[in-house]
Amino acid sequence: GVLRIRERGSHGGHNGLRSIIDALATEDLPRVRLGVRKGELPEDLAEYVLSDFPAEDVLVVQEMVGYAAEAVDCLAREGTVAAMSRYNGPRKT
Image (cartoon, rainbow, N blue to C red; front, side, top):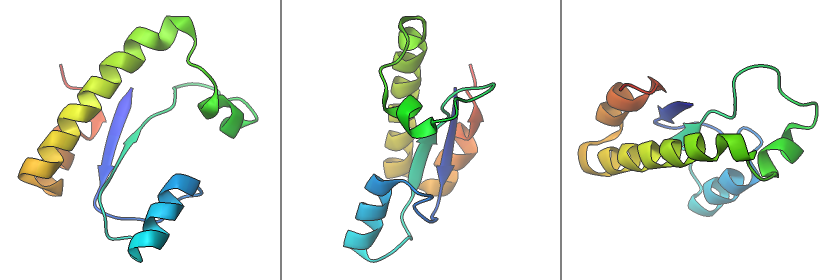
């Protein structure tokens, strides 16, 4: 999976992020995004991202969530620029 950290931005149609931006009255907050999947995506993307992960993807998802947690820790301790430099893009092994 691919992780992307940004310093700020719009909600991009994500209702949860829209709610946070509305509550804080600013888009100036860092966000961490995990890539959905490579290849062709289904027509109903919302249904796809809200469905259970296929059994064959569970291990990859667990590893990616752990990697994202490391990125969030770096973001909190060292700042957005350091976290973006270290974690943006394909996972570095």
